[in-house]
Amino acid sequence: MSENLDLVRSIYADLERGDSSRWVEFADPEIQAVNVEGLMPVRSTGVGAAEARLRDFMAASEDFHIEVEEYRELDDERVLVFMRRSGRGKASGVELQGPRGADLVHVCNGRITKLIWCWHRDRALADLGLET
Image (cartoon, rainbow, N blue to C red; front, top):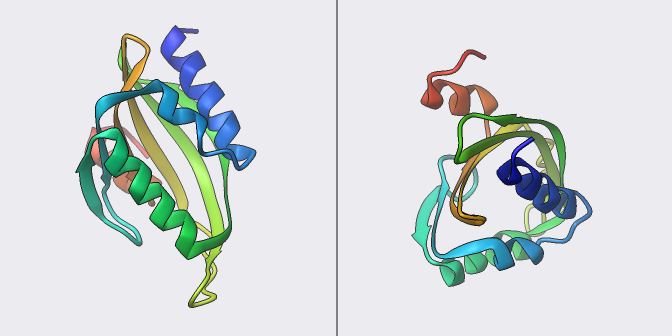
């Protein structure tokens, strides 16, 4: 198992416990964060912008959590994380009983350089040219 995979596992273990603060200490200052689809499709650069997006999402959600199903190391810099997301919109009450999603985490020299959030696993796999 590589150091990058170990790092991603430890960060997502925190996220599963509801702690979304620790990933920042491993984020590259110019991290690119991309939400391909879902409730807030957007792209940002920099730790501050990524933190603000996460904070806005969490403020609009209640009982939000993830459950990691699998980690797949794609190469020396990319780890694909398969998960389920769930929660509820605070204002709407709409359930986010989630589709099976995937995050693509780019890690270089122990720093997260790019995060791509896909709400639908099939889309993530198709974008990467991998089988479903």
